[in-house]
Image 1 (cartoon, rainbow, N blue to C red):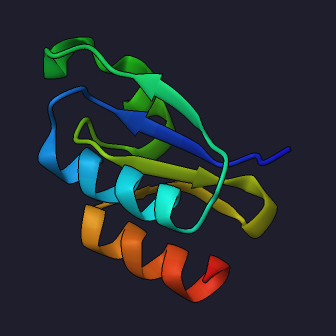
Image 2 (cartoon, rainbow, N blue to C red):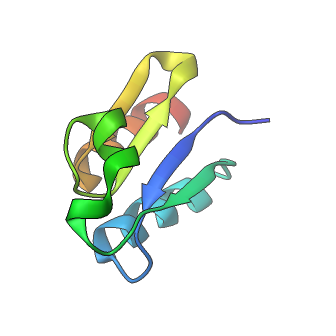
Amino acid sequence: MSTLELYDLPGCPFCAKVKTKLDELGLEYETHEVPRSHGQRTEVKAVSGQTGVPVLVDPDNGVEGMPESDDIVAYLETHYA
């Protein structure tokens, strides 16, 4: 079972980009849906230090809270492709 976690907001195009890459690579992951209001995103802020999404957590590789969809996609391609 995978330990990948993705902090996500439905309808977010940046989150969709990361989910598409995860699916393309056949990776299993757990999704944490964040509230629409940035002020209520305490869980993702605790993980990454910011309230934007997407945020990837990959504890098996020491990734505690990677933001930015382009960085996440590049990371997934490097480590899982």
